Image (cartoon, rainbow, N blue to C red):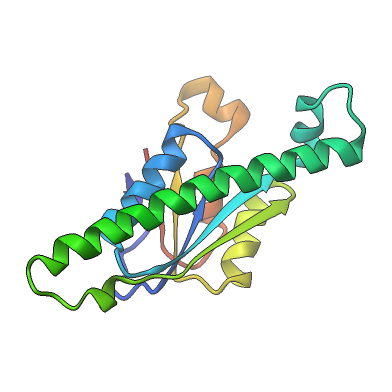
Length: 165
């Protein structure tokens, strides 16, 4: 995990999710470290690579399929985040704590575009205090060729970014 500065008063977090184990780890990290922060879960569909994945379909058809798949993924992550939040509330209720303080707003968003740019724009649009993003941990030549979405996001925003591996 890599952080680009810490902010103890985080109220709203952007978590890009792509269905990978790394993005699931990012959601779990947010649950444990920021139990009261509002969360915007974002899935970005890259039209260039996305259309190639739906070979033999029309552009409108693949966009519809991609949108539905993204919404399903976000619903799953939202449920996971809500369940973890509810569990934390119940755990704290056992020690006589105000469970109202553990409620959070969870928003889900699907964007079409280039992932790095879309994540950076979403950070501004949704006025988040921090981004928590999973990293696939590529190394060597693969990292040079493919690059790192997480690192490029971190370089292009002025808010803290936590990279979870």
